[in-house]
Image 1: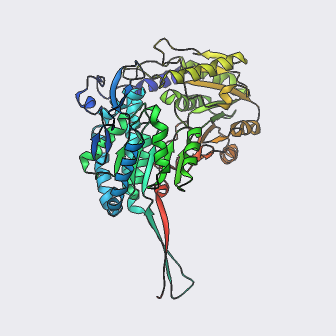
Image 2 (image 1 turned 45 degrees about the vertical axis):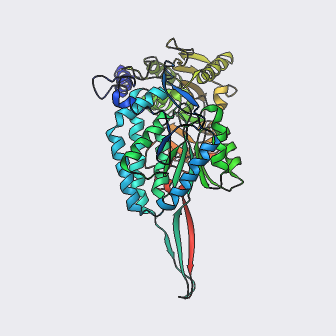
Image 3 (image 1 turned 135 degrees about the horizontal axis):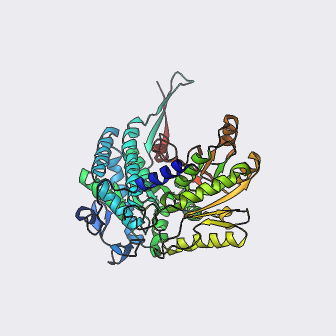
Length: 514
């Protein structure tokens, strides 16, 4: 990579973390932000505590500081939320699409005006750099605006009838109460991508946010309340890890809940699907990934390095579509490894609220342990560490951004999702070998490849067994695209014009005697 290109990449990474103002105060110092650090859950338009008064702490992963304590709810409170959502559905489904759209647009607008406060909260509880948090808030609220429009385009069909006496119609109607279970890595966007579609379709929701990051969810409720979204339409039940399974079980087993939408691990997704069988719920599952990032000999290597950095290290590697295995063809292998390590060596690790930080902490020490185990396994089996490869001095939740070459298929990094700042680079010889390696996993969420051979581009794009493909691009998420995977990476799609269909039933109506 040219010196100019290297400087530009580092400059771009630093620009990502610059504040929109000259100085960004911490959540403890920001009056408006701290006012959004709620201490109650939100059920039926009320800010409520757990029935037994129990709470659990929400801590900053960068330093362990206590941000807030929120209600540790259990099955009884969850069923109460479901009951209120079911009552609210009887009214909300009868709002016109335009009435719902107006409320959703107001919700979008007020969150847009308070984007900085929402970003401060997100960084405090999740750890990602403020610039990334701002980007997530913008991305998350864009789904509310998108589905406010899509809700007005829920079209049915008039079907040509074979009988003169009959008229045939397809109607689309909301499924009902939806249980929404979301992860900690995108605590704003994952909620709004689901809830925006559900509410626009006429459904009501009960949200169980991740125990590590409940404050972002509660903040969205605050703004929903401000713009007049009716009580019971949006409910958030908070709980600790200890009670997460029983809260999830209520959502899956209650006959009043018609759908479950979950983002998280494949193992948990399978449990939720099994629990939903008795009530035959509709389910949407956005589950684990093991994305391959392929660099062919014909690729622009500098562009491939930039794409790998964007894909691998966003969110400190804690994204479901992160490049988990980097496959590089032998002619450009050494060049790619050298250039990738050079860029990664210039990352700035630190608290996400510190100016200049490009890599924040992992969500907890358990996550660090997993990254470290993958590194040690790779080294023990012949992998060569080019940069990083150790816990970072910043603290117990930090790990040094790492690049390892000479990776082989028997290493854990090839079969398990690392979910951290580790880029394992594998050498391959032929296109067929690369595609075989990329597809040699039970997951199929996302894949990436770089090539300038148009025939190869078509072949590989069609042959990769994934739901989403980045071609000469490392950042593929957008409001307008259908997000989701195949195989054990899930069911259904979110975002795009297809996302609202996940919350609608098709009813056939036959008019006789015409």
